[in-house]
Amino acid sequence: MAVNVYFGGNYYGGYSLSSLEFLQKKITPELLTRAKQMGFSDKQLAHIWKSDELTIRSLRKSMGIVPV
Image 1 (spheres, helix red, strand yellow):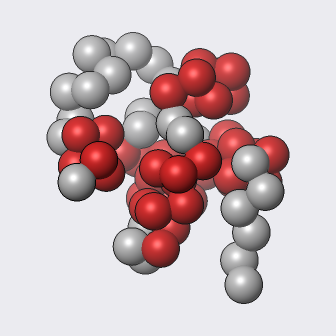
Image 2 (cartoon, helix red, strand yellow; image 1 turned 180 degrees about the horizontal axis):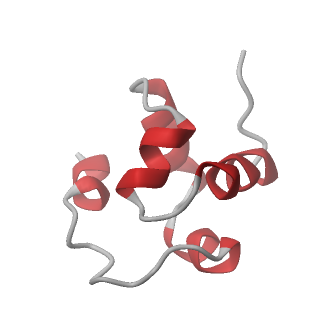
Image 3 (cartoon, helix red, strand yellow; image 1 turned 90 degrees about the vertical axis):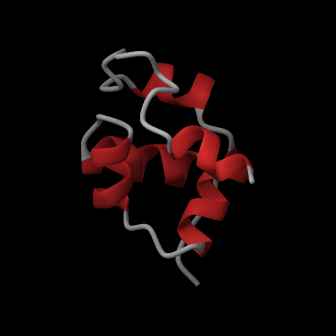
């Protein structure tokens, strides 16, 4: 499953994921949609991707992924 590749912890090789531009290059809309469907909160995803909740929320909204 593709999600596991990204959640494995070593995928980003220690890079800091604080910038929205870097996240946009690494996190696809499909991956983020699947993570949200699996029940991950923006806060949990921020922790996993070594970012912050507001950056993940901005990324999600920029990809058109909104709560239903």
